[in-house]
Length: 189
Image (cartoon, rainbow, N blue to C red):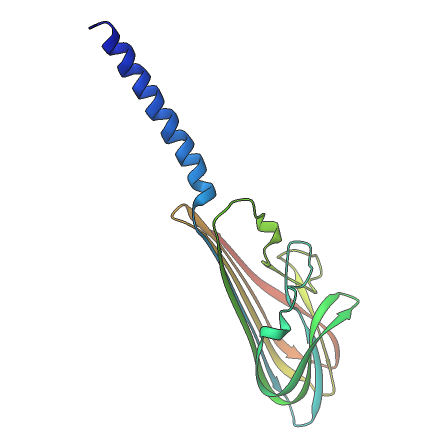
């Protein structure tokens, strides 16, 4: 009987270690993950009159714009918005007069790791080299304007870590296509 106690103890330790290993690896699947997007465009025309502006939209890894993003945008100003196709990809078209602020935010939670982060919308459309770095194309007709676009992507996966991306595009626009530098920041916590 005394000889079987060490065997039982070793078997219990091995079983406990296996259970912990399985639970830890499965925990990454069941852990709550939070994703949030924050997008804002600020337009300050140089003069009064009508303008048309086209700028980047939130996009996935492949540069495809977030579906139905316009229906949940908030518009402050005398402008209308629509989605258009440009030589540089899909963009947000803003037509109107006077200053405008366009914002969009979206949050969701998921529990499985089966969703690929490449499916998340952590990118922008209309960037010259595709994903993350480089320049953004912005079009304006009618007037010049001071332009600012900011986009933030946060992906928090439980207490294990998080990814944070931010894009800032600012500049004074002149008639036609403008190429503005993207101030990009990335952090993994």
